[in-house]
Image 1 (tube, one colour):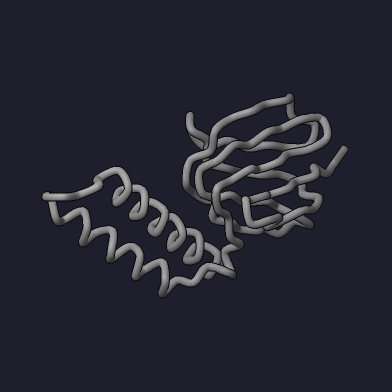
Image 2 (spheres, one colour):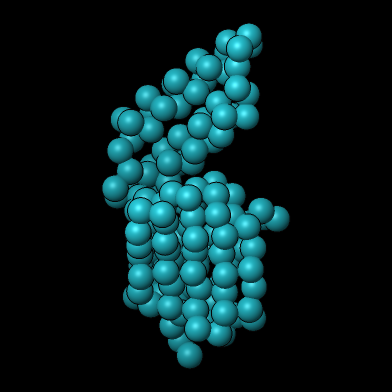
Length: 135
């Protein structure tokens, strides 16, 4: 078996469905890779990049937190949000980053966890978009 069925699904619907040669993702315990025939695995995902190589070319995605399940049938990503790198609105992500940084600077009446999460998501989106642009 030289291909792996990959599905990336969010509450808004499927972001990707296709056959790939390999996948690299950001798991809760660190980054990991999956090749066809990988042993079954289930792990939590952290906000970050996912790279799926198809036909020898990398496809870049931003993936919010969620879960990854690898089975003999393939791999499914269930994420709270996900975007193809080319679909990321960098200006919007930069504005979200700035808003999150401003909230973090205001110590009083701050929902720190929410602001930190917003900053992490914005930075990850920007990183994925910039990495894709340089390829």
